[in-house]
Image 1 (cartoon, one colour):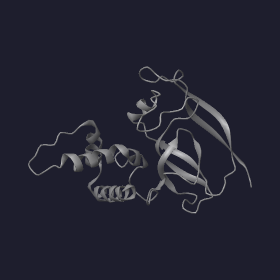
Image 2 (tube, helix red, strand yellow):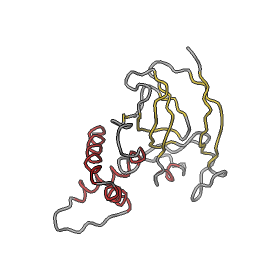
Image 3 (cartoon, helix red, strand yellow):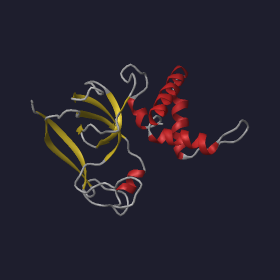
Length: 196
């Protein structure tokens, strides 16, 4: 096995905030060299984008019975993100694949066999920016879309109140050129099918 070294920069959670987190007080940047020698089934990801969402504040409060695990002091933050596979010992994720899933806030992450990663279909050929996968096609957009259809059940002639969550969905659709709207809807359908 050949061990490779990667210069890695991480955002480390160092202290529970009493309000908004402050760089240097609650979060610190750590630079180090990561030695990588993948085991069978593992991947090395180069993290391209991370999602910064309001629920992350809840994870910083140290609450034990949260619906999602709280951040651990001394460890990198994590959230949904977009990554590129740069090394692989997993046939499901060849080198060059672009994926979305739970990733740490660092340049490079080794991911084990049991991960929540999903391929982004045709990511390199698509005209959609990768940032859409952590926005309108990610958790915020899918939450808005699901909430609208399941709980809103809009009908013709009704007035639709757009909350801040739905604003992301609506603004993203309005800003897309009309020729991309159908591609966006197709990608959204693929993402919804992959999580159901």
